[in-house]
Length: 166
Picture 1 (cartoon, rainbow, N blue to C red):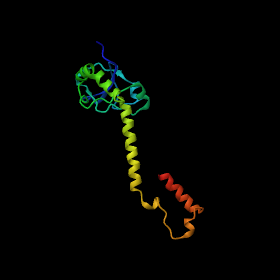
Picture 2 (cartoon, rainbow, N blue to C red):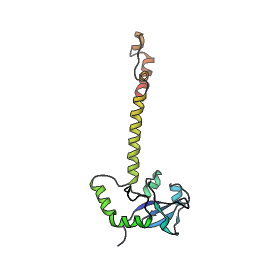
Picture 3 (tube, rainbow, N blue to C red):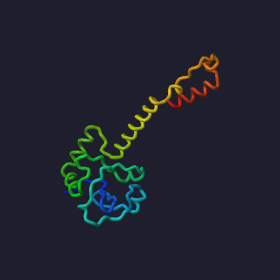
Picture 4 (cartoon, one colour):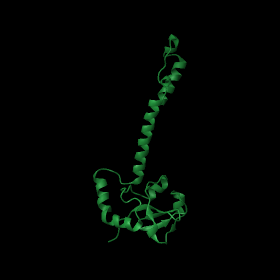
């Protein structure tokens, strides 16, 4: 029975390079960088595949390559597996795992997981920035009656800056 198509990133620890499992074929990338330029310069991987290990990082940051390689956010239990062990898992469990992900409404794509983590980190950073901002940047306190006037240009400029931080 043919295996279901999948894209996965493997590491060759001795040669320090990436090998991409692209729909059943192995492709060696010329350097330890996963981007479209490396993908354009790929070569068929012809060496012993038993020394390849599934990378724990399947997300690709290059937006062009992400459209070509649809890597999955694979379960932690298979990350670091050798290629033969990964292929056995994929053939036996891959369809069920994929179906379970889709049934629960989760995206199995590594790129989506990376984007979700990025947006979560950005939201947390913004919340932290707001909490750690000095009070003076959010609150204008003055005893001078003219500075509390909404038509005051200095007041307007300051309020504009405050709104930008929010």
